[in-house]
Amino acid sequence: MSLALAIAIAASASAQADVLLLDAITTAPANSESGVLRPRSGASMTQVQDKFGPPTTVMDAVGEPPITRWVYPGYTVYFEHQNVINVVVHR
Image: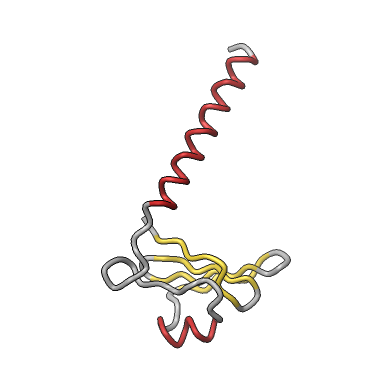
């Protein structure tokens, strides 16, 4: 396989992955009772635990700033320090 062909294949795969990621983001279920109710960005760990209960799994913080993951049935909550920065719905 030529180098040019290998580069073209790699670029195509990357572009497809970007499209799939964008599709997943734009088709996430509503954050409501009719979709998947989950924490909102900016909520504290205490607020999340008070409203949604204890997570099924707590992943240790990694990196700087520290990023912690709490896994709930149906979604994973990402915290920077003590505040929610993102919630990813499981598929």
